[in-house]
Length: 156
Image (cartoon, rainbow, N blue to C red; front, side):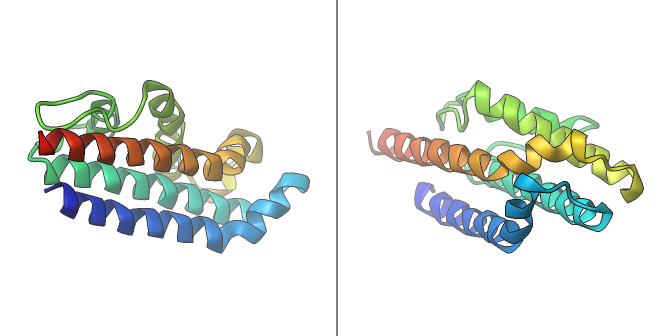
């Protein structure tokens, strides 16, 4: 169970890192220059894909470890919240502080799905864009701890 989950998470991590790598030239440019409308649209799509990839990890954890995915209007938030709690078969996946950080990406993804691209504002999304690589590193670190702890618990 844990071996399969580790492999699935590794695949998602590769995809998330690939997403950052593809957008790196634009991410670097945005540190010193405000992006234009087309670049903002591209970065918004990247943020959407970024959180979707993270959510894919959480869905894999949930399904692989035998829990039912939340349902209903707020299932995305419930899934994120569930990752901060332990269950009978797993430790917490992420810390509350990382959950709070990821909630900002979830909220942006929700806005992006409802908005026209001309409604996107760099001031509203710049911190998420400029912090996405750091956020990914934090997630990867916490996933490593989660997998190690879960595998050790499973062996006892």
